[in-house]
Image (cartoon, rainbow, N blue to C red; front, side):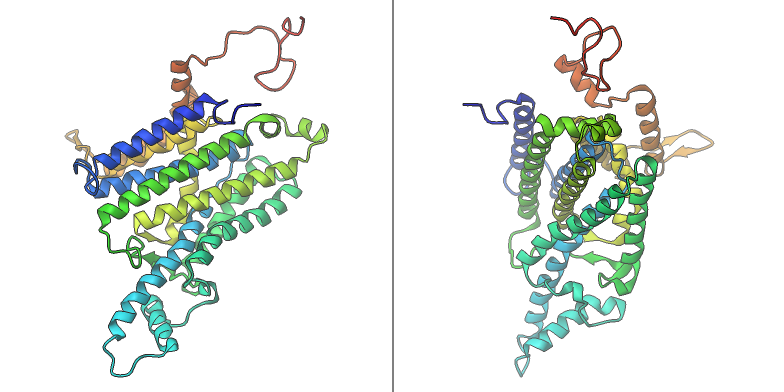
Length: 409
């Protein structure tokens, strides 16, 4: 009887143990359940960082393993946030309206309550009517289903159209970026039904929950950690075995894999859709911790940042994607939060809040030129996983292929 998949992969156990230790440590130092050494705002930052690690996993799976440089996966991340944000905003507004109408001389009708909720939500864009896309906003199970269905269907349709036409390389990257830009521009319009540039706000207030933000932040930290753990195991399982070998083969030599009789388009469509759903789940957990979502969150630049995180961490390594996203998120908070003192040069003062993006871009260039394995390469060094110096020409396109002189015996 074979051992379970996780037990056959010690690296997964190491990752899960480290994640559990991190989550427990933050809980014990939080204001809600521990010593209070870590503030509630920083607990939220750490919870959001775990969500960014999850979407980075999705990006690494589609880019690092399958070779599809998608510059649109943050759009799926944002859609997941919008789907859950609709319910949060509706349910919270419903409670406010009900309390305001409780002392009315004549009890309001259901339609009057709905109209009042619509006025509260859409008054900022000069409307009071619920668009059709809010039809299920009053139902949490329905909106949670839409977190998966809407981004999943968008990725399925887009991927099917692109892959069946055999669009690859930079052209596919441009198409994914164009999709993201079109979605962002649509959401900026008031007619989109999602409050245009105002976005959805107040998402940090869970309807019907009386616990304080300190407690809620820990709940979301636990949920984000659980989602990251499940996502890591799922991605590790997908890239293992024969399926994972075919996916890596598509990345290295798509034409040869197609010649061998594999449905390249089917594999790419599956990976593209799966990673879109993972990104959407990450977004659904991220934005209730952020408290607000607007169209700027799904702008193309966000997806480019996502690719930078994965590159810095080391693409083609699941742990590298997690390390990269966590590293950039924490360092970004440090630099942009005013925690790093400015550097006066006499003729000019370096303000790190303004220079952080320049530093991030420079880091990406340096990693690409001098450390293509990213931070994950350091983990390989520590773990002793550097490949031995092998001589001779490759028998196959993959780096693990046998070489001349190794095919005997």
